[in-house]
Length: 191
Image (tube, rainbow, N blue to C red; front, side, top):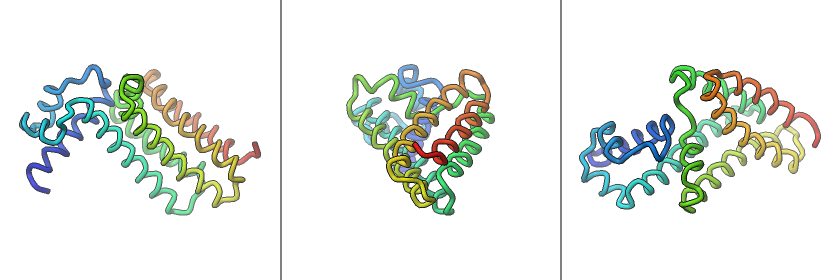
């Protein structure tokens, strides 16, 4: 990776980490630069729209990472409930390792910015929709009725984001375990 491109990725990685740990409003551009080690000119070169543009890029970057993980699990041919259980196991371990200080960068940014920045709101809607599609397709492949699979997938995305918030509040992965149990029911019983 070229040095300049490495600066862009370093800025984005640092912003995502800071946003998920302390939120969008509490994270300043200077802090992102200090953590990233990138020169100030790189920030404005790659993100001429400043913090709002970094926030949008962070939502898209985090979305792509989650989508890749869910898609990889779906490629194993397992059902939607098992995809979510395995994803929750991974996320639970990640949350535990962070001391439950990490969270979803998408949720932290959207909670603070969706009312003011329609691009961020739209990016989150696209992210949630893409994740739900992976779960919906896996559920249908395993015999779930399409309308049930669609509803269950959308509810599951709400459970994922809500469980991540509760993990931080309770400093425990228990909300993920409990949510995974409910997801199993969502995809296994007729609506």
